[in-house]
Image (cartoon, rainbow, N blue to C red):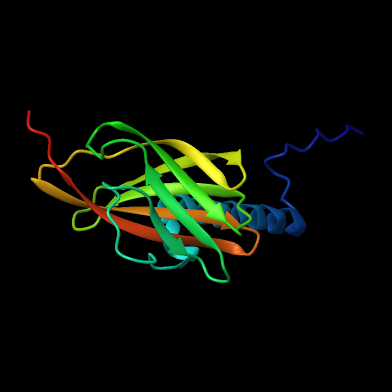
Length: 170
């Protein structure tokens, strides 16, 4: 009697369990890709509790403040003249807020200019510092918004401050 040749892997059908595991893996990869795409492409303001500025202020003149409720406050200050394409030291001072991270976003108010995010580093005692840069625009006067987003154990909180930049003469 002649022994049968070994069966090839191509002729052996896959088990139902293996097919199920392959489908679950594919669905998991698709969901993970959707989540990552949604997280990185959406605006960061989707899950932020926004608090309005405390009073009208001019970032060209100095720091602006906002109350974050329950005696919590934030102050935003740019060190130097606000001009396009200049590296600007920025400082956020927090009072009665436990922050994991502080981000300043510069966005165009009337024209989509993208979101320019600047992650600030903790200096201790509620002070966060970093550098930011305002983009250039073809308009003579470009209205901008500085959004301060604070990541806290209770969720993300933030405020915004509006300012205008006059185009530099070339």
